[in-house]
Amino acid sequence: MQYLKQWIDVIFNSYVDKPHHHILAVAVPGPSSEFVGIKSQYVKRYKRRWEESKLKPAKLYGKCIQTVSISQRNTGGTCSRISADDFSPKIVLTRQTGDLPRLSMAKINNILNQQQIQPQRTIIRSGTDELLGEDVCARRLALEHEVDVVLSDRVCETLLKSQEWILPISYQRLGRERDVVFIDDPLPSSSLPRDCLSIGMTESLYGQVLRSDSLNSVSSKQYVYTVLNVMRQGCNVNMLVRSENYLLDERGSALSIETSMEYFHDRGMEVIPIGYQAHWFMQKILQPEVRPLLCRIDPCSATVLRVEEKTVADAITVGNDADNEKGVGSLYSFERIEETTLDSLIQSMMDTLFATTKFERDFKRRSVMCHPGRHESVSCGTAVSIHKEINNVASEKALVDVEKELEDANQVFLSTPDYRLWSWDDDRIAYTFPVEGA
Image 1 (cartoon, helix red, strand yellow):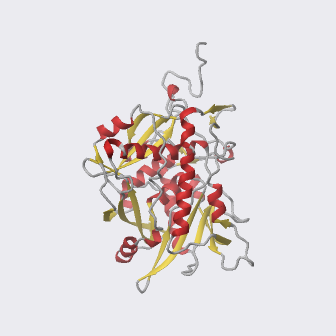
Image 2 (cartoon, rainbow, N blue to C red):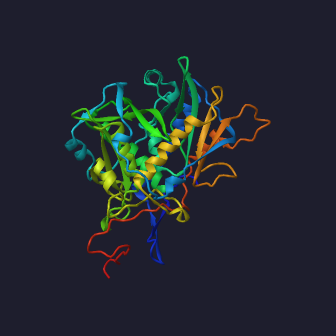
Image 3 (cartoon, rainbow, N blue to C red):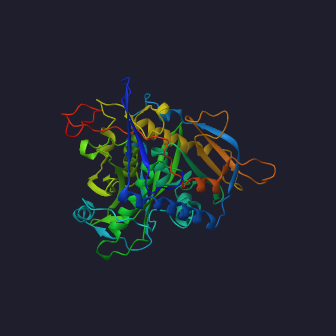
């Protein structure tokens, strides 16, 4: 279904241990409808970058050549606890494309808090004009630090927060003997109304802050390259992650903005999914001084309710402490509600990245990695599939058509619910909604 000026966002609020469920349907008209087209602009920006890249990635990918199990992702099984020591992070380079604005937290709060968000048509967080495999600095650092896998922070975010994704993969030989895997930013995908709004609101908040007090550094970015050393299946794997920053505080620390739609803020804030917490954790691993900001937004009025700065403590204590070992992930269908821990989610992400080093390597043809897996023998929720680009269209059937995927990315689905829990006040019975004036 194409973008609408008004739509229905169906939120299933399910209490798994009870025999009954509450189904809530909420119309989201007014100011919020102005943010819908921003996602389409993002898709167009990605498509243009894909088409104009120097390496000319293929548009069609054929039969499945390999599958990778990620069943651990959706289980709360016994996983070892994750800590910074498991990654041995080291920032090896920081570079900027221009002067980034430096703002105090007081100023940012003043810009954002209780302000109506203005639609932003210039896409800020769309990535660089070049694919990651064309980044000269990344290639040099990969060779210098004997890296096995190069990826962006957006790939980490996607693996932790999304249930459906397509990641472009290429293999390059650096120097005489160094074979390196490059994982580019994920293709945009179709979304739910909540996700679509979140993209539009986040872009607009960045634009609102950057344009305050005549700041004109909208196109400037800071790149931070971090090397991680991870032990997987008895092997040391070196990963180079490129993070992109658009805002700095007065001390020069990066600021990142994330949004959460609060449909019933007058009756309690929503519980943030475990995937978001895992993302905060990884942000702190990659850039210890980064300051993640979560903006709680009323989608009906397009206003910021409050701004929360998140820390490692927020990531590891909510939904993953001794009293509440398991949290609810970012789940898109009732049948797939399963409990996930932060530890198992990050372990699963690292296993997926490690698996790319074991694929059949082809330096002449690119590949894509898909979840859910696109193969008849793959259980859609427990494995990813890898597909090589097609050389002969006449003799091979395409399972991944990039142009079609980007066209479908403009879709917003109204029929699939997005599950969230609420943080209920102490004096309120959980999952009840009093009738006003009753």
